Length: 449
Image (cartoon, rainbow, N blue to C red):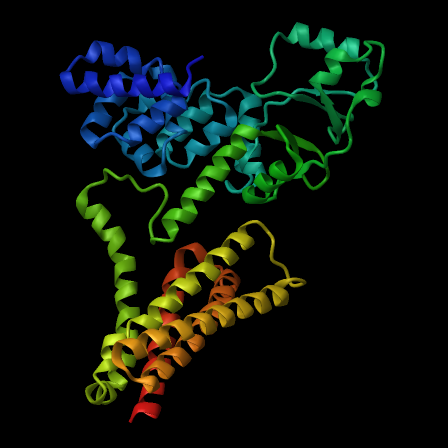
C-alpha cells in the first residue's frame, strides 16, 4: 500500500518522465496509481499532456478513473473515445458508479452498456437511477449482504465462507425479513466474537435508524458525522432495504460541497477545468463580471446623486470608500457564518430571531467602536470634527445594515431557490455599497452644507 509521500514522489517522477519523453516508464507509473490519484493527476495536467496520459491508462481501469473526474474533464475525454472503448470501460464497474456516468455518455453508448448487463444488475441500475443524483438513493451502492433474524451466527459464518467475499467497505450485514424490510444491522465484530449458537436477532443492533432514499446527500453526510458511521442502510418509504452508503461515498459528498461553496462564491463551477480553452473560461467568468458591473453602476448612480455635495466638500471624496469597505467586510462575515449555519442545519424558525439579535448587537458594537476610531483619525488628519462625526454615524448605520443583510440575504435567496453561496456576495456588496454611500454622502449634505 502506497503512502501519500510515495504517491507524490510517483507523480513528480511521472511529470519528469513526460517532460523527457520516456513514455514506457511513464506508462508503468500511470498504471500503478489508484484511480483517484490518477484522476487528480489528469486534472492537474495541461490538455496536451492529459490526452497523452489518458492514452496510457489500461482499458479496464478507464471507467474507475472517469467516475473520479470533474464533469468537464470527463466530458472532454469521453468525447474523444470510440464507442467500443467506452462500452468496454464501463464493464465490471459498480452499479452506483455506473449510474453516475450514464448521464454523461452518448445515447448509443448508454444503450450498449445497459444491454451488456445481466438482469440483476439492470434492475439494480434502474433502482439507483430512479432517485435524484443528490439524494441518498442516487448515492447508494445496491451491492449488500442480507441475512434473516431467525438463523444462527454459525449459519451466517458458513454462508459468508461459501460466498467467498463481501463487498468492499462492509462493516455490517443487514438483517431483513421475508418482505425485505430492514430490521437491524449485524456488525462483523459481533459476528466474529459472538457465540455461533446465538440467533442473529439477539446479536443485531437496532439503535441506528436507516437512511431514507429521498434524503439529500448533504443531510446524509451530516448523519454520518453525527453518528460516526462507517456505513448505513438505505430504505424506501415502506422500510424495504434498497442498498447502503459507505463513508467513502460521504467523503466525496463533503469534498464536492466544499468545492461548490468555494467556487460559487466567485461565480464559478467546481467542475470547471483550469486548463480549459481561454475563450470558454472567459465566457463563463464574463457572466458574473457583468452582474458585478451592473451593481457597481448602481452604487455609482448613488454617488452621482451627491455630486454637488462632493464638489463643495472635496474631503468627502477622499473618505468616501471607507464606509462601504467596512460594511462589505462586516457583511461578508455575517453572510459566511449564516451560509455555513444553513448548510449544517443550525438555523430554524425557533432560533432565527435570537441569531438576528446577536448579529445586530455585533454590528452595533463594532460600528460604535470603529466609528470612534475613524472619527478620531479623521479629526487628526483633517482637523474637522463635523466630518469625523459624519463618517462615524455613517459607519454605525452601514455596519448595522451589513449585519442585518448578512443574516437575511442567504435566507431570502434560499426561499427563492437561489444558491446563497453563488449570489449572496454580489447582493451583499450592492447593499453595503449603496447604503454606505447614501449614509455618508447624505449625512455630509445635511451636516456640512
